Length: 143
Image (cartoon, rainbow, N blue to C red; front, side):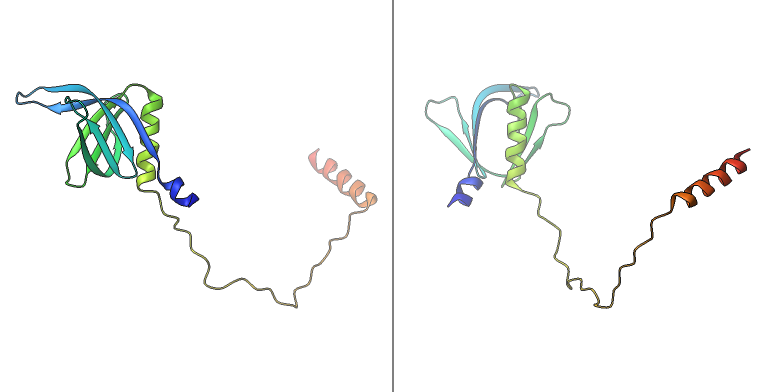
């Protein structure tokens, strides 16, 4: 149950959406976007009317400050601009949650086992006299 709640996240914000026109120029309209799991709901000019799209992926829109691009299941790309960096980051996180990176680490085929015949040797501590002799030799060599 908790896993279901964690995977079901909802992101909502006002976006400036790029809409194609009959003319060559593009225009931007303010729309409310809501992403729940992979379903994107977009407001329209008509009151209480929404369009729904299923999202394949989403990513940053290169060259646009706070811009995002969304690919729908039918292969259409929708472009919009978030109002601020916080909203943009929220959408980027939501897109990452759509297609999480899978853990590629695998468990080793064979567990490591050690031989019973392994022995640990201890290195004897150096005497102070040995240290004095070594230091005096190295001092002589430096000159």
